[in-house]
Length: 355
Ligand code: SAH
Image (cartoon, rainbow, N blue to C red; front, side, top):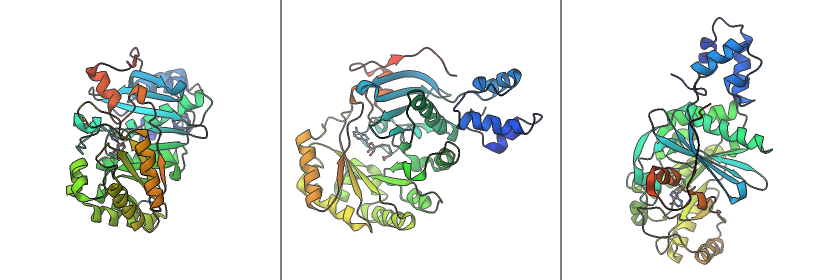
Protein backbone atom coordinates (compact mmCIF):
# COMPACT_ATOMS: atom_id res chain seq x y z
CA UNK A 1 0.00 0.00 0.00
CA UNK A 2 1.41 3.43 -0.89
CA UNK A 3 2.02 5.76 2.02
CA UNK A 4 0.95 9.36 2.39
CA UNK A 5 3.83 10.98 0.54
CA UNK A 6 4.43 8.19 -2.00
CA UNK A 7 1.83 9.33 -4.48
CA UNK A 8 2.47 11.89 -7.16
CA UNK A 9 -0.40 14.10 -8.34
CA UNK A 10 -1.52 11.63 -11.03
CA UNK A 11 -1.64 8.73 -8.60
CA UNK A 12 -3.56 10.89 -6.15
CA UNK A 13 -6.01 11.81 -8.93
CA UNK A 14 -6.53 8.08 -9.58
CA UNK A 15 -7.21 7.49 -5.90
CA UNK A 16 -9.72 10.34 -5.94
CA UNK A 17 -11.47 9.24 -9.15
CA UNK A 18 -15.19 9.83 -8.66
CA UNK A 19 -14.63 12.85 -6.42
CA UNK A 20 -14.88 16.40 -7.75
CA UNK A 21 -11.64 17.33 -9.55
CA UNK A 22 -10.73 20.10 -7.11
CA UNK A 23 -10.30 17.52 -4.35
CA UNK A 24 -6.93 16.55 -5.85
CA UNK A 25 -5.54 20.05 -5.26
CA UNK A 26 -7.11 20.22 -1.82
CA UNK A 27 -5.47 17.00 -0.68
CA UNK A 28 -2.15 17.83 -2.36
CA UNK A 29 -2.16 21.24 -0.71
CA UNK A 30 -3.15 19.70 2.62
CA UNK A 31 -0.20 17.31 2.54
CA UNK A 32 2.48 19.65 1.21
CA UNK A 33 1.53 23.17 2.27
CA UNK A 34 -0.50 22.66 5.41
CA UNK A 35 1.53 19.56 6.35
CA UNK A 36 -1.71 18.05 7.55
CA UNK A 37 -2.87 14.47 7.96
CA UNK A 38 -5.96 13.51 5.94
CA UNK A 39 -7.97 13.44 9.17
CA UNK A 40 -7.09 17.09 9.73
CA UNK A 41 -8.17 18.28 6.27
CA UNK A 42 -11.39 19.91 7.32
CA UNK A 43 -12.14 21.17 3.80
CA UNK A 44 -12.90 17.54 2.92
CA UNK A 45 -16.16 15.78 3.76
CA UNK A 46 -15.84 13.58 6.81
CA UNK A 47 -16.25 10.31 4.93
CA UNK A 48 -13.47 11.20 2.49
CA UNK A 49 -11.16 12.18 5.34
CA UNK A 50 -11.72 8.80 6.92
CA UNK A 51 -11.16 6.97 3.64
CA UNK A 52 -7.92 8.81 2.91
CA UNK A 53 -6.69 8.33 6.43
CA UNK A 54 -7.06 4.58 5.94
CA UNK A 55 -5.84 4.42 2.34
CA UNK A 56 -2.91 6.78 2.78
CA UNK A 57 -1.25 5.63 5.99
CA UNK A 58 1.88 7.37 7.28
CA UNK A 59 5.18 5.71 6.36
CA UNK A 60 6.82 6.51 9.67
CA UNK A 61 5.80 5.29 13.09
CA UNK A 62 7.46 7.36 15.83
CA UNK A 63 9.23 5.03 18.26
CA UNK A 64 11.38 7.41 20.25
CA UNK A 65 12.06 11.10 20.41
CA UNK A 66 14.84 12.89 22.22
CA UNK A 67 15.56 16.56 22.65
CA UNK A 68 18.85 18.17 23.57
CA UNK A 69 20.73 21.45 23.46
CA UNK A 70 17.89 23.10 25.37
CA UNK A 71 15.37 22.06 22.75
CA UNK A 72 17.44 23.14 19.78
CA UNK A 73 17.93 19.59 18.52
CA UNK A 74 15.14 17.05 18.18
CA UNK A 75 15.89 13.52 17.09
CA UNK A 76 13.27 11.00 16.09
CA UNK A 77 13.59 7.29 15.74
CA UNK A 78 10.95 5.96 13.36
CA UNK A 79 9.86 2.42 12.61
CA UNK A 80 9.22 1.61 8.97
CA UNK A 81 6.94 -0.96 7.46
CA UNK A 82 8.73 -4.26 7.94
CA UNK A 83 10.32 -3.19 11.23
CA UNK A 84 13.47 -1.37 10.05
CA UNK A 85 14.34 1.76 12.02
CA UNK A 86 15.53 5.12 10.79
CA UNK A 87 16.25 8.45 12.32
CA UNK A 88 15.69 12.10 11.54
CA UNK A 89 17.26 15.09 13.28
CA UNK A 90 15.84 18.62 13.39
CA UNK A 91 18.30 21.38 14.29
CA UNK A 92 17.44 24.97 15.11
CA UNK A 93 20.23 27.49 14.72
CA UNK A 94 20.01 31.19 15.41
CA UNK A 95 19.31 32.06 11.79
CA UNK A 96 18.05 28.84 10.23
CA UNK A 97 16.40 25.49 10.80
CA UNK A 98 17.77 22.34 9.19
CA UNK A 99 16.63 18.75 9.05
CA UNK A 100 19.00 15.84 8.54
CA UNK A 101 17.26 12.93 6.81
CA UNK A 102 18.07 9.27 6.28
CA UNK A 103 17.95 7.74 2.83
CA UNK A 104 18.42 4.08 3.69
CA UNK A 105 17.79 1.84 6.65
CA UNK A 106 21.36 0.88 7.40
CA UNK A 107 24.20 1.46 4.96
CA UNK A 108 26.23 -0.77 2.65
CA UNK A 109 29.28 1.47 2.31
CA UNK A 110 31.08 -0.14 5.24
CA UNK A 111 32.84 2.90 6.73
CA UNK A 112 34.28 1.38 9.90
CA UNK A 113 33.90 4.53 12.00
CA UNK A 114 30.17 5.08 11.32
CA UNK A 115 27.60 3.38 13.51
CA UNK A 116 25.32 2.92 10.50
CA UNK A 117 28.00 1.16 8.48
CA UNK A 118 28.81 -1.09 11.43
CA UNK A 119 25.21 -2.28 11.48
CA UNK A 120 25.11 -3.12 7.75
CA UNK A 121 22.45 -2.53 5.14
CA UNK A 122 18.77 -3.25 5.66
CA UNK A 123 16.88 -1.61 2.84
CA UNK A 124 16.39 1.48 0.72
CA UNK A 125 13.97 4.10 1.91
CA UNK A 126 11.13 4.96 -0.42
CA UNK A 127 10.45 8.43 -1.78
CA UNK A 128 7.44 8.80 0.51
CA UNK A 129 9.50 7.85 3.54
CA UNK A 130 12.10 10.48 2.72
CA UNK A 131 9.58 13.23 1.99
CA UNK A 132 7.61 12.40 5.13
CA UNK A 133 10.68 12.94 7.31
CA UNK A 134 10.94 16.46 5.91
CA UNK A 135 7.21 17.12 6.19
CA UNK A 136 7.14 16.00 9.83
CA UNK A 137 10.18 18.12 10.66
CA UNK A 138 8.70 21.12 8.84
CA UNK A 139 5.52 20.76 10.82
CA UNK A 140 7.36 20.54 14.12
CA UNK A 141 9.42 23.58 13.20
CA UNK A 142 6.28 25.52 12.28
CA UNK A 143 4.55 24.54 15.52
CA UNK A 144 7.55 26.03 17.33
CA UNK A 145 7.33 29.27 15.37
CA UNK A 146 10.23 28.43 13.04
CA UNK A 147 10.45 27.73 9.33
CA UNK A 148 12.29 24.71 8.03
CA UNK A 149 14.62 26.06 5.36
CA UNK A 150 17.34 23.47 4.82
CA UNK A 151 17.57 19.75 4.24
CA UNK A 152 20.80 17.80 4.50
CA UNK A 153 20.86 14.21 3.28
CA UNK A 154 23.41 13.23 5.90
CA UNK A 155 21.51 10.77 8.05
CA UNK A 156 21.70 7.02 7.77
CA UNK A 157 22.52 5.62 4.38
CA UNK A 158 24.17 6.67 1.14
CA UNK A 159 21.83 8.88 -0.89
CA UNK A 160 23.47 8.21 -4.25
CA UNK A 161 23.17 4.45 -3.72
CA UNK A 162 19.40 4.99 -3.62
CA UNK A 163 19.24 7.48 -6.46
CA UNK A 164 15.93 6.45 -8.01
CA UNK A 165 14.05 7.16 -4.80
CA UNK A 166 16.13 10.02 -3.47
CA UNK A 167 15.94 12.20 -6.56
CA UNK A 168 12.11 12.18 -6.79
CA UNK A 169 12.14 13.09 -3.08
CA UNK A 170 14.46 16.02 -3.78
CA UNK A 171 12.09 17.17 -6.54
CA UNK A 172 9.09 16.95 -4.26
CA UNK A 173 10.84 18.78 -1.41
CA UNK A 174 11.72 21.50 -3.89
CA UNK A 175 8.56 21.65 -6.01
CA UNK A 176 5.89 20.97 -3.41
CA UNK A 177 7.28 21.59 0.06
CA UNK A 178 8.81 24.72 -1.45
CA UNK A 179 12.44 24.55 -0.31
CA UNK A 180 15.06 26.17 -2.51
CA UNK A 181 17.54 23.88 -4.31
CA UNK A 182 20.49 25.79 -2.91
CA UNK A 183 19.27 24.86 0.57
CA UNK A 184 19.30 21.13 -0.17
CA UNK A 185 22.58 19.24 0.36
CA UNK A 186 23.31 15.69 -0.69
CA UNK A 187 26.22 14.12 1.14
CA UNK A 188 28.00 11.24 -0.54
CA UNK A 189 30.79 8.87 0.34
CA UNK A 190 31.96 9.42 -3.24
CA UNK A 191 29.86 7.31 -5.61
CA UNK A 192 31.16 8.66 -8.88
CA UNK A 193 28.35 7.42 -11.19
CA UNK A 194 25.83 9.08 -8.87
CA UNK A 195 27.75 12.37 -8.86
CA UNK A 196 27.82 12.31 -12.65
CA UNK A 197 24.11 11.63 -12.83
CA UNK A 198 23.40 14.43 -10.37
CA UNK A 199 25.39 16.81 -12.57
CA UNK A 200 22.84 16.21 -15.34
CA UNK A 201 19.80 17.12 -13.23
CA UNK A 202 18.11 20.48 -13.55
CA UNK A 203 18.24 21.46 -9.86
CA UNK A 204 21.53 22.86 -8.56
CA UNK A 205 21.58 21.11 -5.19
CA UNK A 206 24.68 21.29 -3.01
CA UNK A 207 27.07 18.40 -3.01
CA UNK A 208 29.06 17.41 0.06
CA UNK A 209 31.70 14.73 -0.31
CA UNK A 210 32.76 12.74 2.75
CA UNK A 211 36.47 12.71 2.13
CA UNK A 212 38.10 11.98 5.53
CA UNK A 213 41.45 11.20 3.90
CA UNK A 214 43.50 12.94 1.24
CA UNK A 215 45.49 10.03 -0.11
CA UNK A 216 44.33 6.68 -1.42
CA UNK A 217 46.31 4.57 1.06
CA UNK A 218 44.57 6.14 4.05
CA UNK A 219 41.17 6.53 2.37
CA UNK A 220 41.08 2.89 1.22
CA UNK A 221 41.09 1.94 4.90
CA UNK A 222 38.58 4.51 6.18
CA UNK A 223 36.15 4.56 3.27
CA UNK A 224 36.26 1.20 1.44
CA UNK A 225 34.46 2.48 -1.68
CA UNK A 226 37.64 4.44 -2.40
CA UNK A 227 39.11 1.24 -3.83
CA UNK A 228 36.50 1.37 -6.57
CA UNK A 229 36.52 5.17 -7.07
CA UNK A 230 39.95 6.43 -6.05
CA UNK A 231 40.69 10.09 -5.40
CA UNK A 232 41.73 11.12 -8.93
CA UNK A 233 38.48 9.69 -10.34
CA UNK A 234 36.44 11.25 -7.52
CA UNK A 235 38.05 14.68 -7.92
CA UNK A 236 37.42 14.64 -11.68
CA UNK A 237 33.72 13.98 -11.01
CA UNK A 238 33.64 16.76 -8.38
CA UNK A 239 35.24 19.22 -10.81
CA UNK A 240 32.67 18.32 -13.47
CA UNK A 241 29.82 18.74 -10.98
CA UNK A 242 31.12 22.14 -10.03
CA UNK A 243 31.46 23.20 -13.66
CA UNK A 244 27.92 21.98 -14.42
CA UNK A 245 26.28 23.68 -11.42
CA UNK A 246 28.56 26.61 -10.65
CA UNK A 247 28.19 25.85 -6.96
CA UNK A 248 31.01 25.37 -4.51
CA UNK A 249 31.41 21.83 -3.14
CA UNK A 250 32.12 20.97 0.44
CA UNK A 251 34.30 18.21 1.82
CA UNK A 252 33.38 16.52 5.07
CA UNK A 253 36.27 15.51 7.27
CA UNK A 254 35.64 13.58 10.51
CA UNK A 255 38.77 14.26 12.55
CA UNK A 256 40.12 11.02 14.01
CA UNK A 257 42.78 11.31 16.67
CA UNK A 258 46.23 10.50 15.27
CA UNK A 259 44.77 9.17 12.01
CA UNK A 260 43.83 12.08 9.75
CA UNK A 261 44.69 15.14 11.85
CA UNK A 262 48.43 15.44 11.12
CA UNK A 263 50.11 18.25 9.14
CA UNK A 264 50.55 15.89 6.19
CA UNK A 265 46.78 15.30 6.22
CA UNK A 266 46.19 19.04 6.07
CA UNK A 267 48.63 19.17 3.13
CA UNK A 268 46.80 16.41 1.26
CA UNK A 269 43.37 17.87 1.99
CA UNK A 270 44.35 21.42 1.02
CA UNK A 271 45.82 20.18 -2.24
CA UNK A 272 42.60 18.37 -3.14
CA UNK A 273 40.40 21.29 -2.10
CA UNK A 274 42.45 23.68 -4.22
CA UNK A 275 42.54 21.33 -7.20
CA UNK A 276 38.90 22.15 -7.99
CA UNK A 277 37.90 25.06 -10.27
CA UNK A 278 36.52 26.74 -7.11
CA UNK A 279 38.28 25.64 -3.92
CA UNK A 280 36.13 23.31 -1.82
CA UNK A 281 34.91 24.39 1.60
CA UNK A 282 35.89 21.98 4.36
CA UNK A 283 33.59 20.96 7.20
CA UNK A 284 35.51 19.55 10.12
CA UNK A 285 33.60 17.23 12.44
CA UNK A 286 35.36 15.74 15.46
CA UNK A 287 34.67 12.00 15.20
CA UNK A 288 31.75 10.91 17.32
CA UNK A 289 32.67 7.79 19.22
CA UNK A 290 30.84 4.65 18.11
CA UNK A 291 30.76 1.23 19.81
CA UNK A 292 32.86 -0.73 17.32
CA UNK A 293 35.51 1.87 16.47
CA UNK A 294 37.94 2.31 19.34
CA UNK A 295 39.72 5.45 18.07
CA UNK A 296 38.58 8.75 19.51
CA UNK A 297 37.84 12.05 17.88
CA UNK A 298 40.52 14.70 17.74
CA UNK A 299 40.40 16.81 20.93
CA UNK A 300 39.19 20.40 20.60
CA UNK A 301 42.65 22.00 20.52
CA UNK A 302 43.72 19.66 17.73
CA UNK A 303 40.59 20.48 15.75
CA UNK A 304 41.31 24.20 15.94
CA UNK A 305 44.96 23.60 15.04
CA UNK A 306 43.94 21.55 12.02
CA UNK A 307 41.64 24.33 10.87
CA UNK A 308 44.48 26.82 11.19
CA UNK A 309 46.72 24.57 9.10
CA UNK A 310 44.06 24.50 6.39
CA UNK A 311 43.66 28.25 6.49
CA UNK A 312 47.44 28.67 6.26
CA UNK A 313 47.21 26.56 3.12
CA UNK A 314 44.49 28.77 1.65
CA UNK A 315 41.45 26.60 2.42
CA UNK A 316 38.36 27.74 4.32
CA UNK A 317 37.10 25.38 6.97
CA UNK A 318 34.23 25.37 9.44
CA UNK A 319 34.24 23.36 12.61
CA UNK A 320 30.83 21.78 12.78
CA UNK A 321 29.26 21.73 16.19
CA UNK A 322 28.69 18.26 17.46
CA UNK A 323 24.97 18.79 17.55
CA UNK A 324 23.13 16.55 19.92
CA UNK A 325 26.04 14.40 21.08
CA UNK A 326 24.12 13.97 24.31
CA UNK A 327 21.26 12.35 22.42
CA UNK A 328 23.48 10.25 20.15
CA UNK A 329 22.77 12.25 17.03
CA UNK A 330 25.82 10.98 15.17
CA UNK A 331 25.49 8.72 12.15
CA UNK A 332 23.30 5.80 13.17
CA UNK A 333 23.67 6.14 16.89
CA UNK A 334 20.13 6.50 18.17
CA UNK A 335 19.15 3.38 16.26
CA UNK A 336 22.08 1.54 17.82
CA UNK A 337 21.07 2.71 21.28
CA UNK A 338 17.42 1.83 20.90
CA UNK A 339 18.46 -1.63 19.72
CA UNK A 340 19.76 -2.18 23.22
CA UNK A 341 23.35 -1.00 23.54
CA UNK A 342 22.55 0.49 26.92
CA UNK A 343 24.35 3.34 28.63
CA UNK A 344 24.11 7.04 27.90
CA UNK A 345 20.89 8.91 27.57
CA UNK A 346 17.68 6.96 27.06
CA UNK A 347 15.40 8.19 24.34
CA UNK A 348 11.87 8.90 25.45
CA UNK A 349 9.61 6.05 24.41
CA UNK A 350 6.44 7.10 22.71
CA UNK A 351 3.24 5.20 22.64
CA UNK A 352 2.36 3.79 19.22
CA UNK A 353 1.03 6.85 17.48
CA UNK A 354 1.44 6.86 13.75
CA UNK A 355 -0.94 9.47 12.55
N1 SAH B 1 26.62 8.29 3.20
C1 SAH B 1 26.68 9.72 3.16
C2 SAH B 1 25.79 10.41 4.17
C3 SAH B 1 25.70 9.85 5.58
S1 SAH B 1 27.02 10.13 6.70
C4 SAH B 1 28.11 10.18 3.32
O1 SAH B 1 28.97 9.35 3.56
O2 SAH B 1 28.36 11.35 3.15
C5 SAH B 1 27.04 11.84 7.02
C6 SAH B 1 28.39 12.34 7.46
O3 SAH B 1 28.70 11.90 8.79
C7 SAH B 1 29.50 11.81 6.59
O4 SAH B 1 30.43 12.82 6.32
C8 SAH B 1 30.07 10.73 7.45
O5 SAH B 1 31.35 10.37 7.06
C9 SAH B 1 29.99 11.36 8.81
N2 SAH B 1 30.13 10.42 9.91
C10 SAH B 1 29.79 9.12 9.93
N3 SAH B 1 30.08 8.56 11.11
C11 SAH B 1 30.62 9.53 11.88
C12 SAH B 1 31.13 9.59 13.21
N4 SAH B 1 31.15 8.51 13.99
N5 SAH B 1 31.61 10.77 13.65
C13 SAH B 1 31.59 11.87 12.86
N6 SAH B 1 31.12 11.89 11.60
C14 SAH B 1 30.65 10.73 11.11
